[in-house]
Image 1 (cartoon, rainbow, N blue to C red):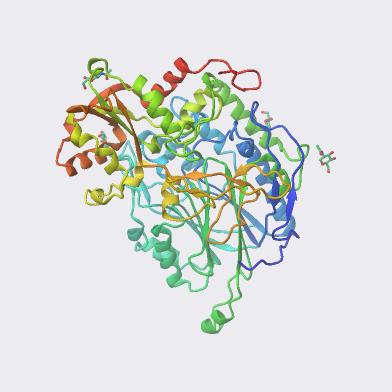
Image 2: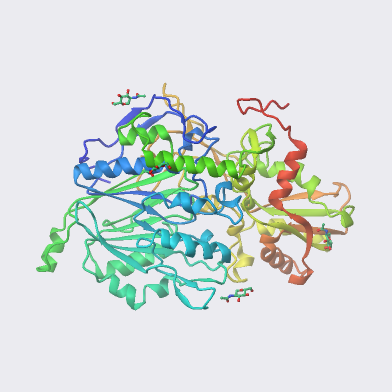
Length: 622
Ligand SMILES: *[C@@H]1O[C@H](CO)[C@@H](O)[C@H](O)[C@H]1NC(C)=O
Ligand SMILES: *[C@@H]1O[C@H](CO)[C@@H](O)[C@H](O)[C@H]1NC(C)=O
Ligand SMILES: *[C@@H]1O[C@H](CO)[C@@H](O)[C@H](O)[C@H]1NC(C)=O
Ligand SMILES: *[C@@H]1O[C@H](CO)[C@@H](O)[C@H](O)[C@H]1NC(C)=O
């Protein structure tokens, strides 16, 4: 990236240390934490991007780093839009899906999303699309169609997604296939698409059309021939995934020098890349920890159509910039040039109040118990006493994964690491926490009396490179782990990945500045993407699956065991058993425990962790 002069006067690499203190928006949320900042660099066209928010619209109440809420984002966007207007440039807001599932604010109501749809719609968004989580369950897809699509009527784009009307059975596009519009200040013509990766796990009331097929369709071929200044492709697609590269290739074929901007998600990482020098792609993290910023500057307006070849040679260079804005009130104040008195707009405050009311009605702060210490997914090695997987394996599973009629039969209990979606922090473990930590409906199932000689090899196969699964159709075994792990194994995005042997880089002590731990992103553009300069957090690679051995003594191997596992991983377990020469069928797999995994975990916590935290939310346990 060649730094160009920032049109609003801020300089690349300017670092400001924030010092003011404020109250966060949701009552009880952690105070936002200050840190050294990199400024935003504006261009003629600028974007704010959210993705994979998964219901975290109340912000992270337990992490001051990310404790701003959706109302604060609304205030922020209002100020930034005004700033753009004042300088005659444009600001657009983008969201790329997976807005649902993963937080009590969405999941805890009956039906899910009773409050979420009304809260979310308050933000003014310019381009929006679906993620896979909007589509796993038929009723979620129905609600997406019934509420979100009309809430974002002209800006919801479904380039490769169809919906089947439950009443008529008619198949039709979920929303419009593309959008052509003109920006307010620069009068730039934009053709925008909204894609989903080639997803096959959806309920039967939606249909994802593969990207390869979509780009051959007549409407798409016409759309990429529209008279326009630039293309904006948003999608619930990882920016390193082939789907975006295919779309880029298709558009570029007919538009040799037009800028093409991509906004992606799904991989839950901060990432940016370029498919060529006149394109730029941004992915903006997960769980409303990150608000992505992209700007483009240079000669954006198309010229009259003559002397095509000559014009191409003269094409001026473009400059692109990106920032990963921590969803931190102090940072939002900083970027908008305001403070706690001047920042919060009436609209923003109203939406924060809607969220507070919803959280109260859902009783999300009810505590099952008080976590005596933090348990980590990937910030601690596995196995270790701070690993959430070690805790489940050694403490929780032996207690709760029990079927009364088979309690004396030795068993292997296998779960996939992906069943856990978030860390447990020291302090209250609430109703909200259950949805945050494990939002899934998985239950334990089992195959009775499997030869131990075979059963004890299953785990190793599930965690191996996946050769044996490749032949079994679309069952990449990485899907058993979390998307973050998925991305890490593919490419180096963070500075500080620790391999399973525990090799790691030592932490920096950046002079005198005290840095809070957080994202230290390395992407294809460089290492200056994060708006806040952080101390790195260790990221440990964890396996696809982990296992508890229950009722099995070290000295004497049993002949047979019950092989117990989460229903989600059934296809892989069956394939592994098959590979080991002990094939079983679908109908050999029986229910083991009626309760959902998530409820079992909450039940264990209620029984085993102290009930009370002191008034500061700190555990008085031990
Ligand atoms: C989807 O599956 C359900 C349950 O199997 C069935 O009742 C329904 O008719 C199916 N719908 C469509 C559109 O195929
Ligand atoms: C915020 O800024 C305004 C205007 O510059 C000033 O009057 C006010 O005192 C500031 N408030 C705080 C809390 O710093
Ligand atoms: C905020 O809420 C108040 C009270 O419900 C309402 O009168 C006002 O119009 C709302 N303002 C905005 C900007 O939404
Ligand atoms: C225990 O296992 C048996 C055999 O699969 C099953 O019929 C029963 O429902 C299970 N019990 C519970 C509580 O799930």
